[in-house]
Image 1: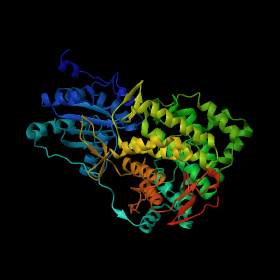
Image 2: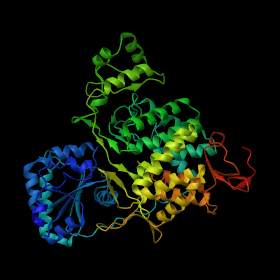
Image 3: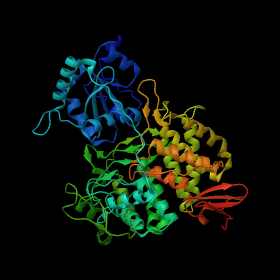
Image 4: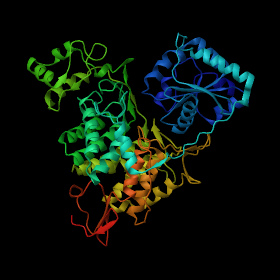
Length: 594
């Protein structure tokens, strides 16, 4: 078969990405990203369409069924472009570069992220969703492709290059950071901002650790108001545990129903920490339910899969919604009465005529919730993205380690230990970490986010077990290999540009923040002195700012001959075994009294 024949068809059926396989039935001649595909575009002087998304992306599914299934659109793309599909979770470097271009072009972004480029990879224009047929608000995707092609024929590679730089957010002082966070807080509904509500994982971690060092009524109100809203409202899966991606409204009522591993990991860490810092026993219940969700829904081969779709049989949230009559039929009259006293339900429903469950309070209904979950499990279920991502699994391991300490449940910390062992077995080849695992194959490309996440987790394991010291040192050196000329790079692949690391700590901690945090902890645990560091801008860098708390003395550095059980220690403690014994905190060292 000639090279041209090979590229004259859709080649995604055997891709090692559930997202790419979802597009294998499109009439568009989709290719996987590779040097061979890029060389083919150059050799044939064809512009490139790069379409980036992920398997649980609702609008990605819509475009797959609409524009990318439209024969006229496909025929035009196949004749004039090289079309490449990219799973953003497998290639965060490509996604970041394309998203930086779109943000620079239009000030906003999203997925699917469709970018037209010259054969030499100079971006021309980027869009998210466009319909297959133009309407009064938007041109069709075909019309855009036609305009791009006309531009390419007239301008060729004269398109100006785009340089994506991801410099660290501006420095700030602590009081300014805290004031800005407080100013952004929604005093009515909890969370931040006045629009759709995302779980602010990194911001909550920063505030809770700051509260552990010094009580503050305003910060306490922000944390409890947000955590309570997330627990009682529509973000929470009240039957099985775990949280959805975000809520589309200010009042945390209706979520976008996808479930992501990273949300479960960070929420587990936050609720376990909040249980100790704020003293609310309901946060322990929430943490236990998240563990249930992780074990029942996400665990595979001793690790955790990536995500669950928002859609079931092309209807968003269908698995999780209940009609009033359905609830009456499943529950006995006495059960239905009790259920109605705790949950907000109605005949008209709150989402397309059905009820997404919201709680009025924290009263437990274990027997009824178990019964409804069993009934829900008989319904059609959302599809899963079964690939396993190294760094996100390392975040999950960190959450289990922290939950074990904070909830006084050592078995959870042991699960975190086993998970890190498993990740190193699968992803570490002695020199580099792979990134994702699917279909028995490891994606061997190296990313800073994986290195920083697994180093951070291993520094926590070392606190419990000094035998991790050699591994910790190796991973610290490996993480430092991503440092180039004073900047962090996310990846340095042979089929794309070297990409600078992101500093944006939402929805997951950035690669740069994870690396900095892991290395700060490594330095402290190995006895190195670190100068204080400035905080960085609120919200953008709140996970990084948690690492600054460590660096600036807000964490106890406890050294004892024998390990002190975690339940007797402040939550803001880094524990070392050795001599001389000391408790160093806020610039002062004294003899421990634990």
